[in-house]
Length: 479
Ligand code: GDG
Image (cartoon, rainbow, N blue to C red; front, side):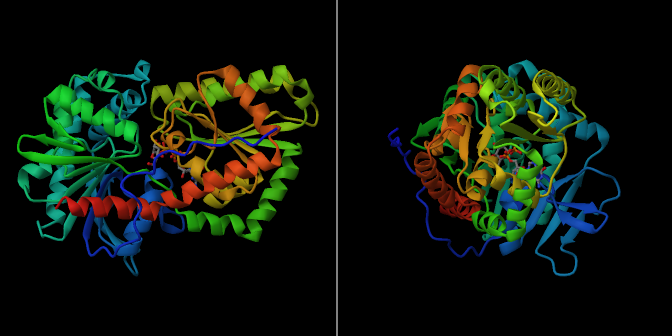
């Protein structure tokens, strides 16, 4: 078979620059603070956003504003206590506030809508009312922690903070405010389903710069502002009520060096080897996700079932290892997806398992990053098939850690726009998914190497330090 050639996408904009010195006074505003208390004391926490932003604050210091989920935690806390890198400022929330702002507006409205999964929408008025109030409280905390100095930069994160930029701008007309949106921005016709779409857009337009992972989301946002607010648009600049906002693509990356070092560690190699022995099959396919209905875990299982039905020669020769990290467990839709996945796993194993072979090894738990790295290293293929995903950084972690694995990637992720060398599939197409598993397992070594070379190159460029530097540099230009 001849090796395919790949059409490379246009490079992320703006073009990558060498890491500049950033004499900024940075305030990050995110839903969660990046630290948590464990038996061994305070630690940094797990998740896409923390993984991305922590290196930035560790490097240059600043303040991180986030919600206080539990009573009794200090409102202001230096971290680490003995030799602080940054200040954590909590906005303590009552149970009602947490329910309306986080479980309600963020998780039952903005999350499903942005992922085009409108069947999960729960449009309750109480949610937006609490969201307004909590965003006002976040804005008040930011105003308290900053003094309006010229060197100050405020960088808000994600769909939990759509109104805060407008509230901050009203008090500080000269502030430098950026926002990065980590999930997809849906098509204008989908966004306008929200009864408060215009109010939310006006809040976002309090920013000087708004970042998305890919140009497609940038286009959707600009169209939303133009059509729903009648804003003036010129290229990537939106003018609305006397203020200018730039909207740009800034695809996020991972801490490439850290992952490379971890992957090269001999103890990881040993762990990977032990894991392969435990699975006991020639081939291992992995999936690693938060247990979320957007991640396509159930469809992926159904596709694996189809693959087993149609390829009996692989019985006993391939294991599917799926980690589903518990997430948003308080919500009914998340309890439901957990049950549905449990049922499918039970059915597949009931149908196909033999005395020395379990086809689906499903783990509903959290692992350390070291353990994840060993799984990435051990796998022959990763099946990453969200129904929608803003970027998906598990993709980047797998590509960085693997030596000869094949990446099967949903074309409905931000990552897919940047990684043409992946085996791309439509996650709703179970037939295509099942076929892609076979294609991955039978891919010639030369083709695997060719594909990986391109994937690794792009992911090195996307590095999270570049992401932060490029965003902050672009924000600096707006001052
Ligand atoms: C949002 C957007 C966007 C998972 N399980 C464990 C664990 N993880 C880590 C992974 C990875 C991160 O969590 C998940 O990142 P994703 O990008 O896949 O997804 P979201 O959490 O939905 O993140 C997404 C991202 O923001 C960044 O902008 O890419 O599109 O939805 O780093 O490794 N980490 C550990 N144990 C686990 O069990 N330690």
